[in-house]
Image (cartoon, rainbow, N blue to C red; front, side):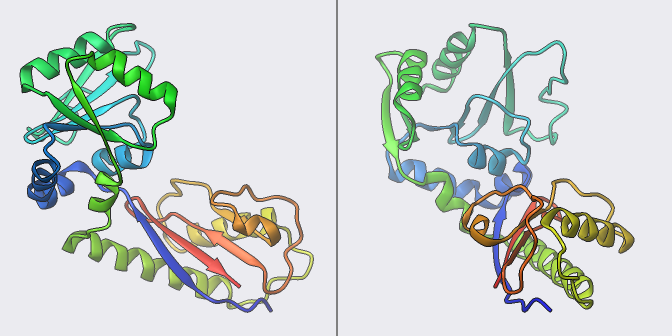
Length: 253
């Protein structure tokens, strides 16, 4: 029998309506404190937090009264419009054609009267050069550490409620699944498939992401793909993602 110790760390990515309703005043305060007119977001996790989706590329420019989302137009894929997305008056999608991103960014700069723009200080040098090119020499770019990340750390009442729900669902599923002994010789892939089957039998409607099951040295990795490694006692990690973009990170020893 594998002995389990549960450690729960939760990463959250909520739709923008939650962010806008509960945190916009705090965000404006942060911009004012740092003397910024806007902040440009390119980090995938921060973009997911602001917009609640992975279907976003390139930049998000967050000002004191609007979020501008820059997405390349693609005839072969679905292209969101302002009316399609969450139906709020704060988020504006800007679809640009190839080689026209600089033009569209400068339209926003002029419209919103932006002069000082913060950016994520962990940008690569090549991405920094892109920013300099897109915004031009008249815009002051200020490196900022963890601006969006710090906001993500502050949870609203609804966020906390969803976290508790996700934690309870995950814990009950795991208790039920591990009520039976795992046969010796079971591999990571076999356990992953068995766990997915168990979840669907217990009325979970969908599995938005693949489960991560890893053992041994692989447990130190942030993301790991299940393999044919045989699971040994006291050496197991499972990372399920179950409810409303909540990711419980469950570590077992």
